Image 1 (cartoon, rainbow, N blue to C red):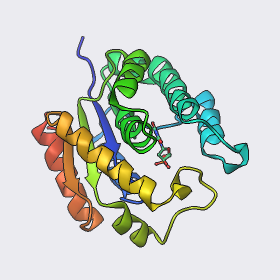
Image 2: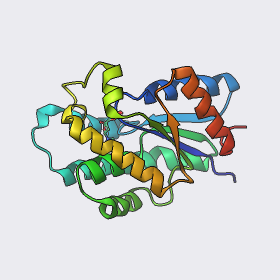
Image 3: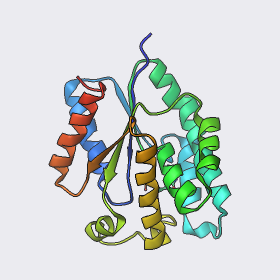
Image 4: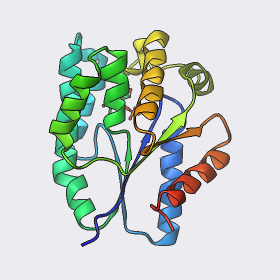
Length: 209
Ligand code: TMP
């Protein structure tokens, strides 16, 4: 049986991930492909509740390890109930954020370290890792300027520019460590230009024909 392909989108806040994921969904719908689109954290009832728990500022202080483990709990649920069965069924799975977010946000920006996150990702996902990761490359300064600032109700978004600069450095580091999987795309261009690059990468990597 042919395993489906697994594609993830990554990047700092406001770089246009959601727009690109939506453009890809539209493109695949028109082609009649068999695909599944998900977002992390979220994608099912349990994971959406964990998402609300992590992101709400009403929960007060949350330790860095608690935050990392909650992201992984949400991911374990998504992998077990949705991603693995879909890949086994031959579907193309596209996920808005995945393990590289945990590397960049919790591993680098929160400072838990690459080894801690690698061990967590291994425990959480096993062999379910992306075939291709599109990293939409834009600095947080440019991205927040374009977006018109951070959402004050979102605990992660409103963590400050120093935090988001570290997240960005985390992504650049991940792209250096995994050059075969993580493909950097310049996200400062128009959505149409960025999407043309997304399609080029997915074709070059054998995800789309
Ligand atoms: P989103 O707003 O892009 O959907 O992502 C939710 C927030 O969660 C965003 O600030 C990035 C953050 N995040 C982490 O810190 N670690 C993770 O593992 C994931 C998946 C997201």
